[in-house]
Length: 337
Image (cartoon, rainbow, N blue to C red):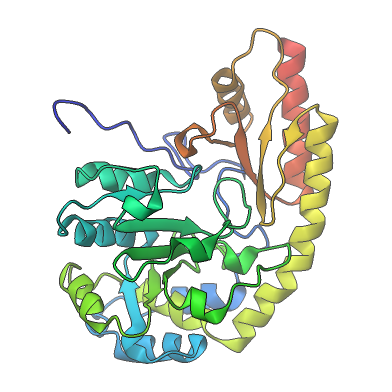
């Protein structure tokens, strides 16, 4: 509650009250997954014992993977957990405010509301500044990333979809990226979104803020299965598997866009393994009605209203069989309208 008002319900993709969709376009998980080696590591994780509460070995492994000192690596229960934790740190600052990209993941704003922080239009007025590249829901590059930098502000770059980028990577200078708190969530790239674990690469010289964020975390934010997944993520063989997925996803994406356009949908540009589209709705059918009907056919798309983009859906790239199921189900909806 905030000033007597109820927060709007959060909207997410994936499983819902009807279970796991047969063809789930609503998440951005790697449709080539799960990664066999990472899945095996998770299945073999020893859940009978606590992980090292300091995550010493895991932090060293992730630090080596990114070429940074271990003290710059911060573990998180998930991206959403860190979003709320870093927002709580920002809330401790006098007159704190938050800046968001025009279209962005709803938890950024939800965390700001939870801590009663205003969301402002000018990043220069914000002590917490969010960026996401490739962005969600659009899958486009973050514009003017360097203009968000301010040593007095917490500048966070959500890199959840960087490993699944299908277009050319932006030529951001290393000195620009190093001034952001870089949030990584490998479960999407590995096709293991049910395993909750993430980590952050902190800017150099931010040891005091890392310590503050550590103090705001619960003990053992990442369990044994999350540790196993993150350890696997840093292995060269797993990275080679991921690299082999990208050409396949690129081919599937081209086919999926062509299929949607054949249905009369308007597809928006994207550089990632997902894109947004405005469906050509049958006369008298609302988008919500169409999504409910698709769900009855075992197909789930992501309504992008919570991202600030009403009237559109976000579609993760799926294999051809799932694409054909979407095409056939939509034709049924058109025939029944």
